[in-house]
Image (cartoon, rainbow, N blue to C red; front, side):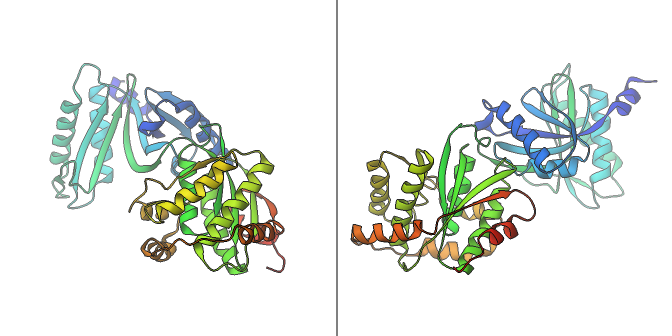
Length: 382
């Protein structure tokens, strides 16, 4: 039997994970998180291994496994690929075979090969595979595209020992692996912007404790739907959520200051030293941002601003966690003009103390019934 036929027989379909540039020194955390998310999502796998700078996952169902892994931060790209030996003739044959199975009539394709080669150049492989596909797709009228203009990318990653010919490639979430900071941060969700702030805190590698401050039962349902989207990014099968009801405050700036005081009280009781403030000078007056930061610092906690550098990309972040239907509300918030005004400290303390009287903890086993579990646990007169 020829070496080419032996390589074809030994090929297998695997999931390839490409760490983000910020995760290259945290790959061990990413491997751990991949294992955890697959177990949480009940996806069977036989092995997770490293091959150079990439992570290879051998799973029973690569499609469902890649979907689960795609929830994680710290990833640049995820691919479902055929793994074969890094041999020119073998890789050329598999790229051609894969391209023929994927290309549709009239599509423009682009062959891209990255990584380490043995005795040949990646460019030579790209040219040979492109020539093969041109010759074999005459009836399909497939055309050669470019790196920036193509319908179908035929991507191959090479390592010292293997070649991974991609069947499907998807973009990852970026950032760094969950809890790679080994620090917990308190986040409060009370609107769309604060939900994105919580997402950004996770993206920075923090373990998050989530507090939701709601105003009514309908508001509670709306916030719980946002939290449900975020829970899948937290690599734990059981998450404790905190809830407080805020009443009688119509002004957003006043409500945010009250929430800052509520967070200080909860952080003190839970011994968390970092507080995420979901305010940015891009949206709010800088004096208001500084005022809240001073409140936190004065009480010997560390204020974090996950939204400090965010601009129009905030809308894309909203889509990442399924907040598409709230984009109009988010855009309206970003268009708002705020005027800071002095608010009596006694009134702020009164609002905060009243809210803390409604404080509740809810333990959620992360799964498909998150929303129902949250609402059932909080059933009462709101």
